[in-house]
Image (cartoon, rainbow, N blue to C red; front, side):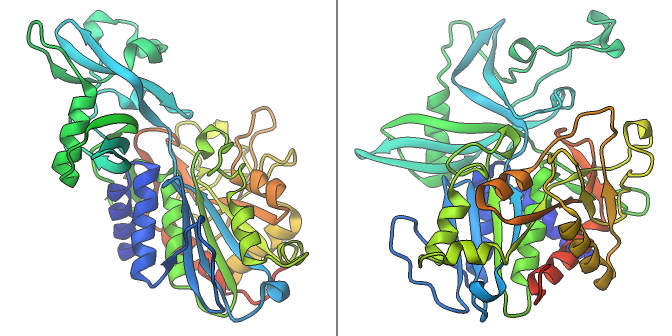
Length: 429
């Protein structure tokens, strides 16, 4: 089971270079399992035992498994994660012709670690909006092949490179995508025209706009002398999306189960499809349109907010509180912060710990050092938006926000198992 889950994650990461592609990948799995797509523009007709999913902006998704028990009696079991990761996104007028090379201007999305982006074989993917035969359309594109690189400056020309080198995002991150002939003009939208024809057989009248991200073409892999680790891009937080989906598709019992995978977490979640927007609440209210049904059901519900945790790095162990340092392959981590950077409280943490113990899944705790700031997740945002009790958890990871992150190869199976137990739990605290 562990090897199969890990290979499934590797395949999911490869198919999901952007939040748009991740959402499309999730939707394909759901449809193959009998889930029916609901369109927010239409009237909904749901029924007990039904399986449904909704997308917004092509980059966020909510999957719904309605159980035999009414949400007014047993609430919802919700698992939340996010589809986006830090990356480099192409600017609207990106062409930079400099010293005979064509580069593309990029904007940094989220809190990316810059240095690992150098000397990587990069490709480009995302959503393109265009007009064809007078009609406005959008399609996902993925160049797949390596088309770009951000070469390092040789140490002979930068002797202080290993002494702490501040990277200027404006000047040093534009990738090189081609070499230009003398007098040759560059038109990035023409490249997108060609890609639409190549990938979709569509001849666009004009490319109007796009949301495109560079990504590393190196596939994720199981690594380590004894295959102890998974290395790959976008583990934060597609790992949790994949775990939530696997748990949902294999969930047993009669409970009402929901998987929420939203975009824009890495930039604050404040959007119409982010956790700080109305997406989840609007979907739940359409499932419970009568009077105070929504409020009553929410007070019987619980959210497991799943987002990666910081594992103890052997070279930087002093960055952790000595008593709260999660180990890779040590199981899911309950994340706690008394200033509400995480939404965990004693009841929700105790319930998750109880689930882990009953499922024979190891469990850990994380509290940041008292002299360091603490990151946050969709947990507090969703809790404050919807009023649902929440526990923040995640799998321990190294190199979070790098172009290539590292997690334990045993931990995915641990997380899927306990999330499955959560979905099947007949009673919540």
